[in-house]
Amino acid sequence: MKHWKAYFTFVKPYTKWILLTLFIGVLKFGIPSMLPLVQKYVVDDILLNKSMELQEQVSQLMVVLGATLFLFVIVRGPVEYARQYFAQMITAKILFDLRNRLYSHLQKLSLRYYQNTKVGEIISRFINDAEQTKNIVEVGMMNVWLDAFTLVFVLGFMFYLDPVLTLVSIAIFPLYAIAVKVLYKQLKKLTKDRSAALAGIQAYLHERIQGISVIRSFALERHDQAKLEGVNGNYLKKALAHSRWNAWTFAIINTMTDIAPLLVIGYGGYLVIQQNLTLGTFIAFFGYLDRLYSPLKRLINSSTVLTQASASWERVLELLEEPYDMVDQPDARPLKGGNHGIAFRNVWFKYHEKDPWVLRDISLRIHPGETVAFVGMSGGGKSSLVGLIPRFYDIQKGSLLVGGRDVKEWTMESLRSSIGMVLQDNFLFSGTVRENILFGKPGSSEEEVYEAARAANAHEFILDLPNGYDTEVGERGVKLSGGQKQRIAIARVFLKDPPILILDEATSALDLESEHLIQQSLQQLSRSRTTLIVAHRLSTITHADQIIVMKNGSIAERGTHEELMDKDGVYTQLYSIQNLNP
Image (cartoon, rainbow, N blue to C red; front, side, top):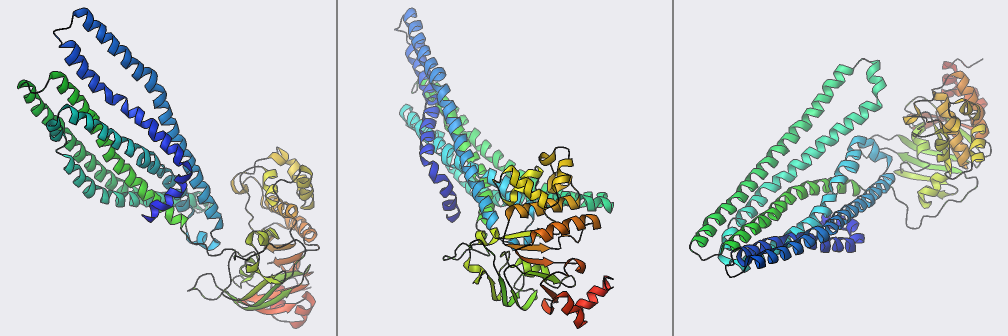
């Protein structure tokens, strides 16, 4: 019941539209239900009426025909259109709201969640499962009620015509109830299994497309094809199991449905022979029989659709109910502009509860406007440490202060708005160069974009691109070189103009020429800002106010370049390894 209540929060804003659609649907299904009565009247009161003159019979027939033509052609057409349009419009808007809510929720989930969840699984729930949930409204809240109304409406006419024959017609109803109870419980499980298997294909495909260059470089196409066949085969197995059960369901339901007309033909025909039932009534009754079992079959089919929709909604709800690792405190306040200092006080951190400590008892003070570099061997904790400042993760012990207050006392949006990050592998979105720079500060003017690009030494190469700033960069920026992507990422940060700057291995993957240009940009960018640099090449950080040497999650050494060289310790060894010692 809980999961239905959660779905109705999306339905509630459209309650009036749903009621209007139901009313129109009553007209849509009510109009055809009049036809058997018309047939009865024509047969008994016109065609078989021996007391009526031929001319009068023809005249009465034309009147009936004109009235029914008006009702079925002039009135029913607009009613049918309105019913279909409003039903589709409501479900489309509910899906729009649901996906907006899902995306908002995804944006608030921590990086830890994305590290533990396959992207294809998320996309499957966002696209496929969300799409299936529309049947909860379209079928469950509209068609089911309209079919139920049609059943009651038709049964009323049938009891009016002949109560005993009506009871014969519905004698197999209890069998339907048993079939639904037995068949659909298993169908729901099979539907969830099939959806999970489909998500597995999407997750596999997404990952392989992202890594297609690796697959080709190792000539793993055949090996990868075989693995896909395994994943695809799992989906085929689940899909066939679902199809088999679905086929049995339809076969059993349709077989039971065919029994009722045979009972009516037998008993109704006997009554006509005995002259206890008029021929017109028998014809009308048989016409109503189709209108009785058609909505009943639709109700049974609706059970199938709703079972599948319910399974999909449970998968969507699992995503919607994924808890947030980090949220703003109730009294969190926005971090104002200006230069800010940063302080680590006995900070301990690990990514998961059962993991070993990544950072151990880190104490460090960074003054406003100061440049601090973090160096050390891979796995020392450098990137983990700077990733704590924008609250990508929360620490387990100690405290982390920005601007004199614990980071948890600031709203995450304002905290992250005050921080600019340039990473080793900066992500560019598909779109134009201009659009990617504007991610730094949406709504900026053309001149501000150009100024940011000039500051990043990017303006010249951008103008040389086929369409300048309107050049499409491709997915993840594949149409640009590593140095070009990096300079666009730096331009993005220049446009943002944050008081705190984090440079995480920003030049380690570049050639020397690109590195030289980018180093110039980064030095200009770091002026008058609190700057943290994670560096691999020690030659790029000799100017830093402080150099922190990390080893096994702890601070091994700290000081200026000259002070650390004089110590002849870990830093000196790293410097010598890179053959930088003159």
